[in-house]
Amino acid sequence: MTLIEPIMLVGAVIGGVTGAVWGFGSGIGWAAAGLLGGLVLGPVLLILLLLVLAMLLERRGKRSPERP
Image (cartoon, one colour):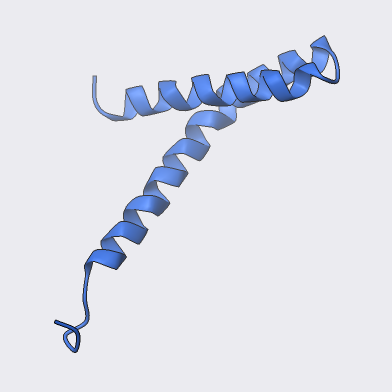
């Protein structure tokens, strides 16, 4: 198992639970749709979030030559 599988599983769990909880107020059908939507979109959004954070942290770590 590489690092990508646990990240995708965590994203699916977080997205699924969030979608189900938000959809539950509107009815069981929306809760099921939110669960399925979260399972699909959760991993994608989590990976994109981690990529953006990595780019920001790498950019922040580099200093210009003028600043010691």
